[in-house]
Length: 179
Image (cartoon, rainbow, N blue to C red; front, side):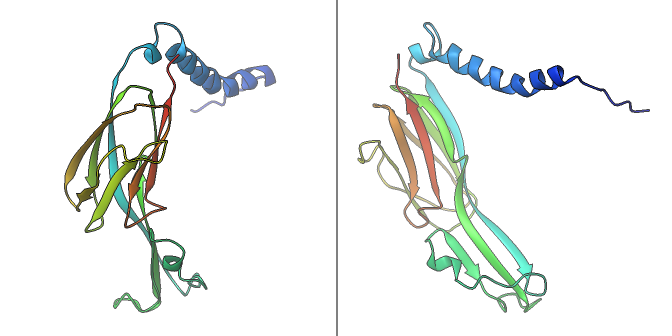
C-alpha cells in the first residue's frame, strides 16, 4: 500500500529551496579561496553532433507554410511525398551540439571529445570571446570521434561552431574569471 505524505506549507517551501541552495553552495565553494577557481584544471567534455528529426503525417498536422530550411542552414525540411511508404508524411530536422552549454574558468585547459552521429561533414572551430579563433578548422565526419583542445586564455564566451549548420549547431563554453 502506498501512502501519501502530507507536507506543511513550510516544509514544501524548504523542499523547493533545496535545489537552489545546493547550486549556490556549489558556486560559492568553487569561487571561494582554495576552491576550484583557484587552480588551473583540465576540463574534459564529451560533445555529440546530432541531427534531430521529427516526422508526422499531414493527416494530423499540416506542414509549415514556410520551408524551415530557408530560415537557417541548420534546419531541414522534407515536404509531403518524401516518404514512399506514406506520401502524406513530412519531416523537419535540425543539427545541434549536445551539450550546448559548458562552464570552465580562465586559464583552464579545455578538452573536447566530439562524436559525430549525423551529417556527412561538419567544418568545426571554436571562436574566442574577442572574435578570434581559439582552434583551427577541423573537418568532422559521421561515425568518428575527434579531439579538440585549447586553453581558455580569457574570460567570456567561447563558441563551438559548425560552418555548415550555424546557427542551430552552436555550443557555448562560458569561461568565468579567476578570483
